[in-house]
Image (cartoon, rainbow, N blue to C red):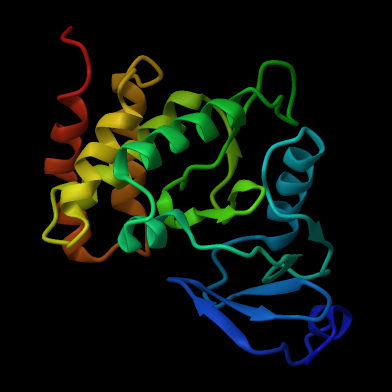
Length: 230
């Protein structure tokens, strides 16, 4: 198996642990993993800096180490299923999953940003497959989209992602609805402008399929149904 130093220098990483839409995750020695970006969408150094900042403030993210690469992020290996896998397995109910997302968003937006007084870090892709349920509690991964701004955009983005599943023919459409309802039990963190922006960004996301983009109209209407009139 490759050591962390070898992988950071472009060496061959260890066994493949998993693959997502844009990246692959490989095992390294001593409890670390390498996430390698296949598409070049992100900046691993910037992402690692955000994660290190959040970890210093006690937010539940994996530890990171510098890799010297825009495409390679070296981080702590987490043991446990993602929230999505736990829901599929029936070990986590959708309402509890939604409440956990609420807690994670609230805790995130309590962390001061790095860009100046009053700023807040936004994840902008916080959904059940980006939360790992470890023995020490949930840990949030995949900070590729992170930026600083209005927390309402973060809430709106998570709501749109869940709503897209809820209005789709996906097998998880049924549990996605109560999960969304739990997320928006208090809809006050959302605003209409933030929801519009979340939908716009989601439509422009290059990883979205044409079928997923087509669902955004119905997804937006579903999220709006939770907002108070006016």
